[in-house]
Amino acid sequence: MRRWGLVTGVLAFALSGCVSSSAQAPSEPTAATREASADARDAEPRMAETTDSPLAATALAESFRAATAYASAQGITVGIAMLDRETGQEFTNGPTSGRQMWSASVSKLFIADDLLYRDRAGTITLSAADRMSLRRMLESSDDAAADSLYATYGTETMITEVATRYALPAISAGNDPGEWELTDISAAAVVRWYDRFLSAAPLADRDLMVGLLQATEPMAADGFDQTHGLATALSGEPLAYKQGWMCCPASTSFLHTTGLVGAEQRFAVAVLTERQSDSGFATDALDRIAQIAFPAGVFGP
Image (cartoon, rainbow, N blue to C red; front, top):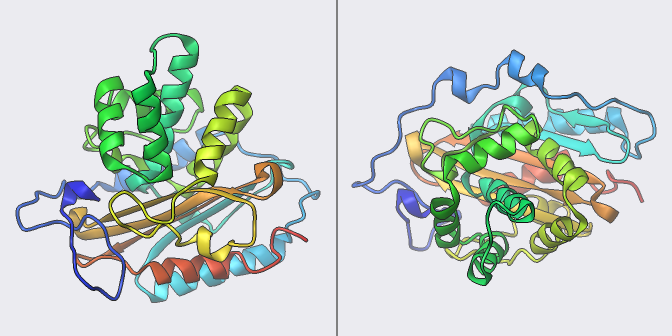
């Protein structure tokens, strides 16, 4: 992302915002901030499992294992989570679904949520320009729009407010709270955020957010191709999605794909990845991870 410098040129992989020689990367997150603790995970309400989901649990568990193994072979740590919002059934690839990673642009979801919530409550009044910035921040993942909204309306307190409101301790402002892209998230927390936002938000706010995510532009404001991950693997499914990409604070690259799948946004999905690297991230690796995790027909006919 922009803050960490921008690598340009013809490359074999897509990358965004790598550390330049003059950029100062933040300190490496501690184990306490990189892994959601057992206590924190237990504090998050568990969804009751049912047998009414169209998802085949055994087959899905195997595909998640295969996707995790493929990622590991590429030197990638992956957290995968999916929640059936109709039945409450939740699927993950195990402990790494609770691993905290830096959010990159996924945190723009929380900025938008906070703004809509506070505007609705009357504690702030969003101008027409603010609403246009919110639109650009989600549709084209515009960093400048996010910067402006984040600085104007509360910086890290916006992240804290959302995490507190939804009881999601794995979402936090991180060790450099002035930087929205360094928000800590986990795959499990992201799918729960999608579910809780859609369940709690007024219909107008829900429709606005979903509509903007459905209208995600193929090319981001910084020139990054947003059609990776879920957008590639689930191109035949109804999809509203938010991507994240960042290279390379603390010599680590991050590439995330999250969203809502199916009619009436029945399924919330998140695939978060990180890799020790100073040289960017191949989007085709995430495409393959998503394709393995969610093979054709996994969401039913």
